[in-house]
Length: 155
Image (tube, rainbow, N blue to C red; front, top):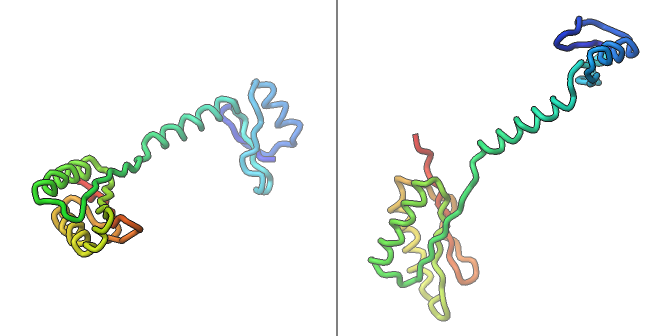
């Protein structure tokens, strides 16, 4: 087997000798590449290696962005003032980097105003055009018409 390590002379050693070298230094013999010819082993402190690997994974995980979805609910007959108020909240959410789920909820017989709900959501998409892009166009699912807007990447 080929042996590598910090304070080891790189070379090809029999398994017994490699184990003896690792034992002599108080370290572990870890197989790095078993499919290579000859297999590659490294003399290292395995517990320390595992610890550092977990630390690296944790650091990568903490840097990963978490997707937050904020919801805004409208009625099919939402008034202009209410619309503007909710639009300001939507702008704030998109500036913070959260996805926006805007939906119109139809109660009772208000389902006959599907067109009004769709117009309202498309108006919202047009007003928020510079802050985000529409990920999913308005779609009716049961009693609610839903639309998703994702924030644009800020430079």
